[in-house]
Length: 390
Image 1 (tube, rainbow, N blue to C red):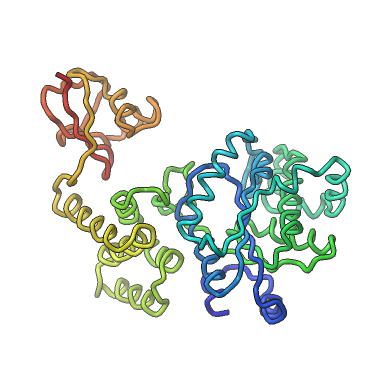
Image 2: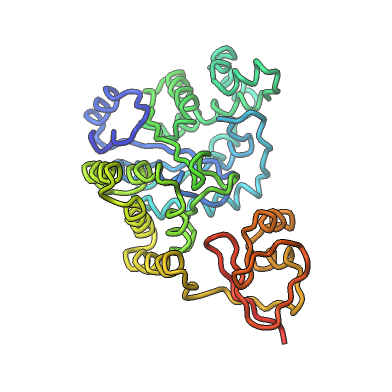
């Protein structure tokens, strides 16, 4: 219980969890995820790491890819209705999502399911019977629905169906425990009610903290461009961790590493008393996170590269090589090298002063003259070797 309760925010309830383990031994622990985006980031790792702990203690994780519920869109924390994704988008994202989840989960102890398996065959009568198991008044107790209702913002009936569909997932796989972020608390409590209405024991609810992204304020999200992805190369992952504010060091250590609580408390005390530089603790954190995805050697190399580039102010060991015309539009250049996803994003980078050519800031959109090999730097961590076409 000490392992399972570590860092947990909500547990409904501890007594039920203890009793269920005593009676059943091996539990079915559910995580449902909608593949609204293909890439996982460290925010997802918080819950996945807890699931891995369940696996190490002998329990079965049931990872449900919401290829059906993703078409509705989870309204949690939303001030507006989510746009619906196509079936094709969800299938493509789901394949990537499942593959990346196994960077943390033990594949042999994971049951991978897609909720279209049981939600797609439901007919209209089935949906009505499911909807009859919960009331509108209880739905409107949900904070985000309540705020939208009070402010006159539209709430679609489809959004009311989302937590019911998620609850039906728990019925379909007979979940004993369901994990999620704190933003999922309402949905998980609804699932308990839905299971009971189908004659099943209600699942135990466990929620984990939401972590802030590299900006230190907003929750980690690709939408906010403050994320650290599972698939970021080791050097990039290390550098992004080093960019988080000092205030997040301890939180990241607790939620994203296996460092013992006593040791974390010691680091926290030493930083507060000035006995240890937060930068050094952050380097330890970055090394631990990279190692968990890529191994010890890659983490050590990433650290060496970081010291070389950001402390010794040297160029990275390897730079992506890009052939460019001798006269090139800087906006087109940023899009070409992959530093910007669009011309508008490229313009924002230039206006923000984050683009340099041979260490000279690019301050206008005038064409650049590239007569010889040059180094393009975008932000703090992206470097490109530009070679003029002959």
